[in-house]
Image 1 (cartoon, helix red, strand yellow):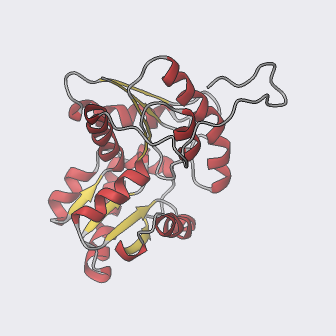
Image 2: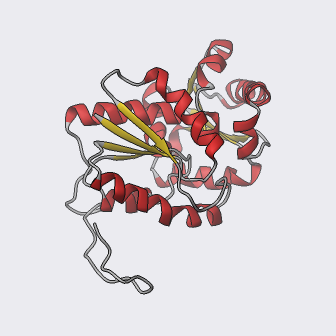
Image 3: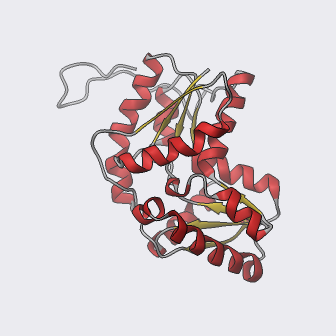
Length: 243
């Protein structure tokens, strides 16, 4: 099978980081491609960044369908453009946030989401609520780091994760910890071993779930919510958008 993992920001360093985390866990028969758009925000740390990341991300989703990929993973813990991506795709598209929230709910009574910036706490709570999963949420806690720092300084980030996650377990009753950023890909095993509580790396969770969905022949329904949009001409372009 062929799986495309899209890092929706333009950071080549983070894209390489994500690839390095996924190569050791992919199946031998899985062809993995990890890439990022050539335009857009370098990191995604606000709703404004998300909005700018969506158009180039959707272009990559459309191209992946044309090139015959079997599944697509959006490796940003905001799932930018996820619903639109499902609309235009004939193969499964998994957002690492959506996939991991559901996985966490199966692994413990309450989970905590760790997010890099304090300003994003409210949006993460809102995302959990929109998924109808507020009763599983123990807390959202910030690492007080930028997204770029989580990628560039793994050791500092892992120390911070352990400290914040430990407090989430002791003070909030968290049974599962979610590392809420693609920049933390691959950090979960070391933290879990020290913390003795289940720690989820959303990029890895979504990727392995994508493999399973391809095996099972599962694709999102086109009957309503993710129905293919009608073709139309978009102003500023010379052609009808291809889908």
